[in-house]
Image 1 (cartoon, rainbow, N blue to C red):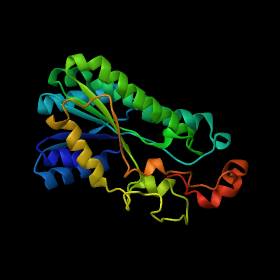
Image 2: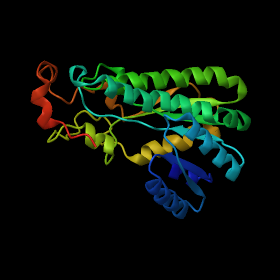
Image 3: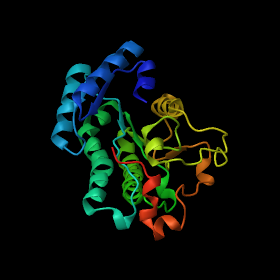
Length: 253
Protein backbone atom coordinates (compact mmCIF):
# COMPACT_ATOMS: atom_id res chain seq x y z
CA UNK A 1 0.00 0.00 0.00
CA UNK A 2 2.77 2.42 0.95
CA UNK A 3 4.84 1.59 -2.11
CA UNK A 4 1.92 2.25 -4.44
CA UNK A 5 1.20 5.66 -2.92
CA UNK A 6 4.90 6.53 -3.05
CA UNK A 7 5.05 5.58 -6.71
CA UNK A 8 2.36 8.21 -7.24
CA UNK A 9 4.49 10.92 -5.68
CA UNK A 10 4.19 10.66 -1.91
CA UNK A 11 6.91 10.55 0.70
CA UNK A 12 6.23 8.30 3.67
CA UNK A 13 7.01 7.28 7.21
CA UNK A 14 6.46 3.65 8.20
CA UNK A 15 5.97 2.51 11.79
CA UNK A 16 6.67 -0.70 13.64
CA UNK A 17 8.28 -2.20 16.70
CA UNK A 18 11.42 -3.65 15.07
CA UNK A 19 13.67 -0.83 13.94
CA UNK A 20 16.09 -2.98 11.98
CA UNK A 21 13.34 -4.41 9.77
CA UNK A 22 11.74 -0.98 9.42
CA UNK A 23 14.97 0.66 8.37
CA UNK A 24 15.66 -2.02 5.77
CA UNK A 25 12.15 -1.69 4.36
CA UNK A 26 12.29 2.11 4.32
CA UNK A 27 15.54 2.01 2.37
CA UNK A 28 14.03 -0.48 -0.08
CA UNK A 29 10.92 1.65 -0.60
CA UNK A 30 13.01 4.76 -1.19
CA UNK A 31 15.14 2.93 -3.74
CA UNK A 32 12.15 1.42 -5.57
CA UNK A 33 10.10 4.60 -5.81
CA UNK A 34 12.60 7.44 -5.94
CA UNK A 35 10.80 9.09 -3.02
CA UNK A 36 11.79 9.41 0.64
CA UNK A 37 10.68 6.83 3.19
CA UNK A 38 11.66 7.11 6.84
CA UNK A 39 11.42 4.50 9.60
CA UNK A 40 9.94 5.42 12.98
CA UNK A 41 9.98 2.88 15.78
CA UNK A 42 6.59 2.81 17.50
CA UNK A 43 4.10 0.42 19.03
CA UNK A 44 0.54 1.46 18.19
CA UNK A 45 -0.47 0.53 21.73
CA UNK A 46 1.75 3.34 23.03
CA UNK A 47 0.29 6.84 22.38
CA UNK A 48 3.54 8.62 23.29
CA UNK A 49 5.53 6.65 20.72
CA UNK A 50 2.96 7.51 18.07
CA UNK A 51 3.09 11.17 19.02
CA UNK A 52 6.88 11.09 18.68
CA UNK A 53 6.54 9.47 15.24
CA UNK A 54 4.13 12.21 14.17
CA UNK A 55 6.57 14.89 15.37
CA UNK A 56 9.36 13.23 13.37
CA UNK A 57 7.14 13.15 10.29
CA UNK A 58 6.13 16.80 10.57
CA UNK A 59 9.72 17.87 11.18
CA UNK A 60 10.83 16.11 8.01
CA UNK A 61 7.90 16.67 5.66
CA UNK A 62 5.95 19.56 7.17
CA UNK A 63 2.66 17.73 7.62
CA UNK A 64 0.63 14.57 7.09
CA UNK A 65 -1.86 14.09 4.25
CA UNK A 66 -2.70 10.38 4.45
CA UNK A 67 -2.69 7.75 7.18
CA UNK A 68 -2.93 3.97 6.80
CA UNK A 69 -4.01 2.21 9.99
CA UNK A 70 -2.91 -1.34 9.32
CA UNK A 71 -1.73 -2.87 12.60
CA UNK A 72 -3.19 -6.31 13.25
CA UNK A 73 -2.74 -9.50 15.21
CA UNK A 74 -4.42 -12.82 14.55
CA UNK A 75 -4.29 -16.56 15.12
CA UNK A 76 -6.78 -19.42 15.17
CA UNK A 77 -8.34 -20.17 18.55
CA UNK A 78 -11.83 -21.09 19.79
CA UNK A 79 -13.41 -19.06 22.58
CA UNK A 80 -12.96 -22.03 24.90
CA UNK A 81 -9.23 -22.09 24.17
CA UNK A 82 -8.54 -18.36 23.93
CA UNK A 83 -7.20 -16.69 27.06
CA UNK A 84 -8.49 -13.37 28.31
CA UNK A 85 -5.05 -11.94 27.66
CA UNK A 86 -5.03 -13.27 24.09
CA UNK A 87 -8.36 -11.59 23.36
CA UNK A 88 -7.22 -8.37 25.01
CA UNK A 89 -3.96 -8.30 23.05
CA UNK A 90 -5.70 -8.43 19.67
CA UNK A 91 -8.16 -5.73 20.74
CA UNK A 92 -5.27 -3.56 21.91
CA UNK A 93 -3.35 -3.93 18.65
CA UNK A 94 -6.23 -3.67 16.19
CA UNK A 95 -8.82 -1.45 17.87
CA UNK A 96 -6.91 0.62 20.40
CA UNK A 97 -3.96 0.83 18.00
CA UNK A 98 -6.23 2.31 15.35
CA UNK A 99 -7.73 4.79 17.80
CA UNK A 100 -4.31 5.82 19.12
CA UNK A 101 -3.08 6.37 15.56
CA UNK A 102 -6.10 8.53 14.77
CA UNK A 103 -5.63 10.61 17.91
CA UNK A 104 -1.93 11.18 17.22
CA UNK A 105 -2.41 12.20 13.58
CA UNK A 106 -5.79 13.94 13.48
CA UNK A 107 -4.60 17.55 13.92
CA UNK A 108 -2.24 17.14 10.97
CA UNK A 109 -4.79 15.35 8.77
CA UNK A 110 -7.35 18.04 9.58
CA UNK A 111 -4.89 20.73 8.58
CA UNK A 112 -4.24 19.05 5.22
CA UNK A 113 -7.88 17.99 4.68
CA UNK A 114 -6.49 14.51 4.20
CA UNK A 115 -7.76 10.97 4.49
CA UNK A 116 -7.53 7.74 6.47
CA UNK A 117 -7.59 4.15 5.30
CA UNK A 118 -8.10 1.42 7.89
CA UNK A 119 -7.21 -2.15 6.98
CA UNK A 120 -9.94 -4.41 8.31
CA UNK A 121 -11.23 -7.87 7.39
CA UNK A 122 -14.38 -9.68 6.29
CA UNK A 123 -14.34 -12.26 9.10
CA UNK A 124 -16.90 -10.43 11.25
CA UNK A 125 -19.52 -10.29 8.50
CA UNK A 126 -20.44 -13.83 9.53
CA UNK A 127 -19.84 -15.83 12.67
CA UNK A 128 -16.39 -17.23 11.87
CA UNK A 129 -15.24 -19.99 14.24
CA UNK A 130 -11.86 -19.52 15.92
CA UNK A 131 -11.90 -15.78 15.07
CA UNK A 132 -13.77 -14.12 17.94
CA UNK A 133 -10.85 -11.85 18.86
CA UNK A 134 -10.20 -10.41 15.42
CA UNK A 135 -13.91 -10.33 14.56
CA UNK A 136 -14.61 -8.13 17.58
CA UNK A 137 -11.53 -5.99 16.93
CA UNK A 138 -12.17 -5.38 13.24
CA UNK A 139 -15.88 -4.74 13.72
CA UNK A 140 -14.81 -1.98 16.10
CA UNK A 141 -12.36 -0.63 13.51
CA UNK A 142 -15.15 -0.43 10.92
CA UNK A 143 -17.39 1.42 13.38
CA UNK A 144 -14.58 3.78 14.36
CA UNK A 145 -13.95 4.68 10.73
CA UNK A 146 -17.64 5.43 10.19
CA UNK A 147 -17.77 7.80 13.17
CA UNK A 148 -14.51 9.42 12.10
CA UNK A 149 -15.96 10.06 8.64
CA UNK A 150 -19.07 11.69 10.12
CA UNK A 151 -17.34 13.78 12.78
CA UNK A 152 -14.40 14.90 10.67
CA UNK A 153 -16.13 15.26 7.32
CA UNK A 154 -16.99 18.91 8.05
CA UNK A 155 -13.26 19.47 8.65
CA UNK A 156 -12.46 18.09 5.20
CA UNK A 157 -11.25 14.67 6.40
CA UNK A 158 -12.31 11.40 4.77
CA UNK A 159 -12.13 7.93 6.33
CA UNK A 160 -12.66 4.57 4.64
CA UNK A 161 -11.95 0.90 5.28
CA UNK A 162 -10.34 -1.66 2.99
CA UNK A 163 -11.37 -5.21 3.89
CA UNK A 164 -9.13 -7.64 2.01
CA UNK A 165 -10.40 -11.06 1.06
CA UNK A 166 -7.97 -13.98 0.50
CA UNK A 167 -4.75 -12.37 -0.76
CA UNK A 168 -2.24 -14.88 -2.11
CA UNK A 169 1.28 -14.97 -0.71
CA UNK A 170 0.50 -13.11 2.50
CA UNK A 171 1.23 -14.13 6.05
CA UNK A 172 -2.44 -13.83 6.92
CA UNK A 173 -3.57 -16.38 4.36
CA UNK A 174 -0.70 -18.69 5.28
CA UNK A 175 -1.39 -18.51 9.01
CA UNK A 176 -5.17 -18.78 8.84
CA UNK A 177 -5.48 -21.47 6.19
CA UNK A 178 -5.62 -25.01 7.59
CA UNK A 179 -2.53 -27.13 7.09
CA UNK A 180 -3.00 -29.35 4.07
CA UNK A 181 -6.21 -27.51 3.22
CA UNK A 182 -7.85 -27.54 -0.17
CA UNK A 183 -6.67 -24.58 -2.23
CA UNK A 184 -9.31 -25.00 -4.95
CA UNK A 185 -10.83 -21.83 -6.39
CA UNK A 186 -14.42 -23.02 -6.24
CA UNK A 187 -15.35 -20.35 -3.70
CA UNK A 188 -13.63 -17.55 -5.63
CA UNK A 189 -16.08 -16.04 -8.14
CA UNK A 190 -13.24 -13.99 -9.64
CA UNK A 191 -11.46 -17.25 -10.52
CA UNK A 192 -8.32 -16.36 -8.59
CA UNK A 193 -7.02 -15.31 -5.22
CA UNK A 194 -6.32 -11.66 -4.62
CA UNK A 195 -2.95 -10.04 -5.22
CA UNK A 196 -1.31 -7.44 -3.00
CA UNK A 197 -1.55 -5.11 -6.00
CA UNK A 198 -5.34 -5.27 -5.72
CA UNK A 199 -5.10 -3.74 -2.26
CA UNK A 200 -2.46 -1.26 -3.40
CA UNK A 201 -4.61 -0.07 -6.31
CA UNK A 202 -7.61 0.43 -4.03
CA UNK A 203 -5.40 2.46 -1.71
CA UNK A 204 -4.28 4.79 -4.49
CA UNK A 205 -7.89 5.26 -5.59
CA UNK A 206 -9.22 6.04 -2.10
CA UNK A 207 -6.46 8.57 -1.46
CA UNK A 208 -6.93 10.22 -4.86
CA UNK A 209 -9.18 13.03 -5.95
CA UNK A 210 -11.24 10.46 -7.84
CA UNK A 211 -12.59 9.32 -4.45
CA UNK A 212 -13.23 12.79 -3.04
CA UNK A 213 -16.92 11.98 -2.41
CA UNK A 214 -16.27 8.54 -0.92
CA UNK A 215 -16.11 8.47 2.87
CA UNK A 216 -17.46 6.29 5.65
CA UNK A 217 -17.36 3.22 3.42
CA UNK A 218 -16.09 -0.32 3.87
CA UNK A 219 -14.65 -1.61 0.61
CA UNK A 220 -14.33 -5.40 0.47
CA UNK A 221 -11.57 -6.25 -2.01
CA UNK A 222 -12.33 -9.94 -2.25
CA UNK A 223 -13.38 -10.87 -5.77
CA UNK A 224 -16.93 -11.44 -4.45
CA UNK A 225 -15.69 -14.38 -2.37
CA UNK A 226 -17.46 -13.19 0.78
CA UNK A 227 -20.80 -14.05 -0.80
CA UNK A 228 -19.79 -17.71 -0.89
CA UNK A 229 -17.45 -17.98 2.10
CA UNK A 230 -17.84 -20.83 4.54
CA UNK A 231 -15.62 -21.80 7.46
CA UNK A 232 -12.42 -23.49 6.36
CA UNK A 233 -12.31 -25.69 9.45
CA UNK A 234 -14.67 -28.67 9.62
CA UNK A 235 -17.98 -27.71 11.18
CA UNK A 236 -19.33 -28.63 13.72
CA UNK A 237 -16.31 -30.86 14.52
CA UNK A 238 -14.05 -27.84 15.04
CA UNK A 239 -16.26 -26.46 17.83
CA UNK A 240 -17.32 -29.77 19.35
CA UNK A 241 -13.78 -31.13 19.57
CA UNK A 242 -11.18 -28.30 19.30
CA UNK A 243 -8.38 -30.69 20.26
CA UNK A 244 -8.89 -32.58 17.02
CA UNK A 245 -8.06 -29.45 15.04
CA UNK A 246 -4.50 -29.05 16.36
CA UNK A 247 -2.98 -30.84 13.39
CA UNK A 248 -4.70 -28.41 11.01
CA UNK A 249 -3.68 -25.19 12.74
CA UNK A 250 -0.32 -23.54 12.10
CA UNK A 251 1.72 -22.64 15.15
CA UNK A 252 1.62 -19.03 16.30
CA UNK A 253 4.57 -16.90 15.26
